[in-house]
Image 1: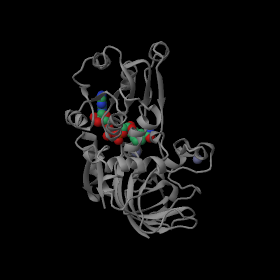
Image 2: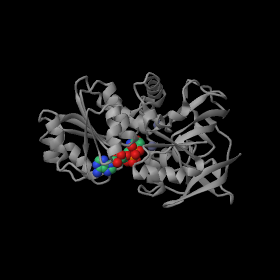
Image 3: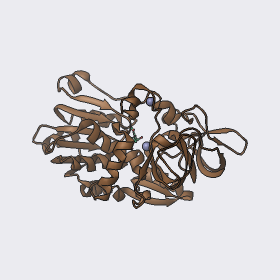
Image 4: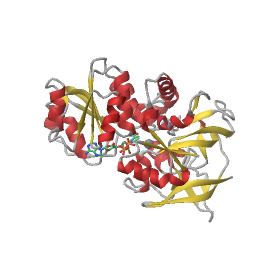
Length: 364
Ligand SMILES: NC(=O)c1ccc[n+]([C@@H]2O[C@H](COP(=O)([O-])OP(=O)(O)OC[C@H]3O[C@@H](n4cnc5c(N)ncnc54)[C@H](O)[C@@H]3O)[C@@H](O)[C@H]2O)c1
Ligand SMILES: [Zn+2]
Ligand SMILES: [Zn+2]
């Protein structure tokens, strides 16, 4: 079928093209997209900050309605409302162990543009193959995705508000709820208040953290962080010594848990210096090289530093919980949404970069 899609053609060059989308194959479904969130990782691919094969249809936070089911699909039917999360093979050791975020084939299935059987689904006007980011390529009116990556949701739920559960919000909240697991009364610091950081703040509140500190450089984001659960905010541009301020706010001890979600090595360093002894710090951004003194930053302070993909989540289990928290008003991701038409995608990317849109959502 013919589709209209946003294609990263080459480094920094975004085009809107009419393309040919193939039929869903074994274990796949065709989804008519309602909306798609824009995550920083789309920009990472477009700008080739991480080298990935292009051309590629961008978009990996698609939500929509199943229009056709391929052979072997039993868990979904035409008409189901779905959030399309990340792909995984379903057969490797981590997948069989309930840890699909650690799938042996993650890098390939997320970033190389093909599907599980190694083939691509999209061709351009010249018949050349185009990749689909995260096995979906959902900045398009339709896409094909693996049924196992599609999480069925209550048709009453407002789908277009749930895009970020596919990636950004699942990542930030999952780090807190699936990996770090703070106890009520623990303390938490978030470095970088994008969709990932905000969802970590909301999750820290859900977990009952007593002190939740948000660090960013955009004043409007810090204001919103207070509405989402932050008990204290720090403007990194105005504060001369962020770790010292975090220690001051936590009785001189530092935080139990922290997350870096801005993508800056220097913030990872600041985070490590903000931990209390035996604290647990996580990185989910693509921060690159980090200036680290292992003796001081990790060993002497007994601090654990880790990284993970997609909030260490099993989407078929975790996303329905996040939808429920959202419907109960305890995970207000709608506060992050700003809606755009498809032809406004470049403006959406620009607003995200400028800091005026936290979670841009393209509505089809
Ligand atoms: N590991 C994963 O599975 C996964 C999933 C989703 C996103 N990501 C990555 O996580 C990161 C965050 O994603 P996002 O969509 O929330 O990004 P975003 O760009 O929306 O948010 C980044 C935030 O960092 C803030 N920031 C910039 N410089 C700062 C500084 N010096 N001090 C404090 N804050 C600063 C920005 O103002 C912004 O609010 C990105 O690197 C993204 O690629 C990883
Ligand atoms: Zn993402
Ligand atoms: Zn696997």
